Length: 293
Image (cartoon, rainbow, N blue to C red; front, side, top):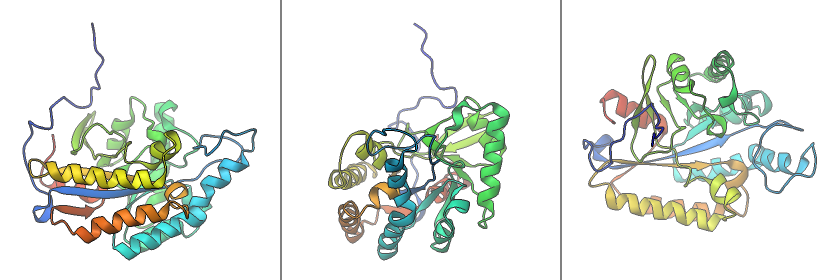
């Protein structure tokens, strides 16, 4: 039998890799990837709270738009209060459709990472030239915020066979598309190596709450359980936990309190092994010291 395997990385079990530390001897890097997304009214892709009856799908469009109008600001308050850094995963179209939202991320010192133009379409079905243009437009738009992004998360985690090559050619240092490991790993491209920083599809509110019909208390408990397990392993190996949040889900008034209580407990524990950081800082450390596998 012939087995098709991804050509971008080789298999190596996590138990058989070089050991290293995060800055200041930390062992578990935790970052929050907060997705700021826009959608098309009357068409395109989008998460659904309930099955739509027709287009325009007012119910689901308005539910998603709540995140940018209300939920994002509720999460800002929580992260400000707890002194937590974040990686803002920004659709470039946020700049035009939600004035001040991206700027609020910049004002808080959040890392700005590229998340395509909008979440109404997936890039994986584009031609190579169209995908290259999409990456260029997104990069140029977000660079106007003051810093050219170095990290990429594809809308809907959609990639073509060319995506890692195109990202590296465009100057990106890391991608969050691959959820195959608890450590940063290197992907091969036509022009050099592209770092894959772990981004969880399990500790992610869309699969957990929308797809699996969970709720906030269960999701918050999942975060704490994951941290506890990774702390039990991190003395043997450095690890990464990425927590993916969407303001239209976890920014709802009834969902924020369980999340807040979980994060408050983790911050109060003040475990010296935890590095509260951003995806970009993780990538910078690995690249600077030539780490990863």
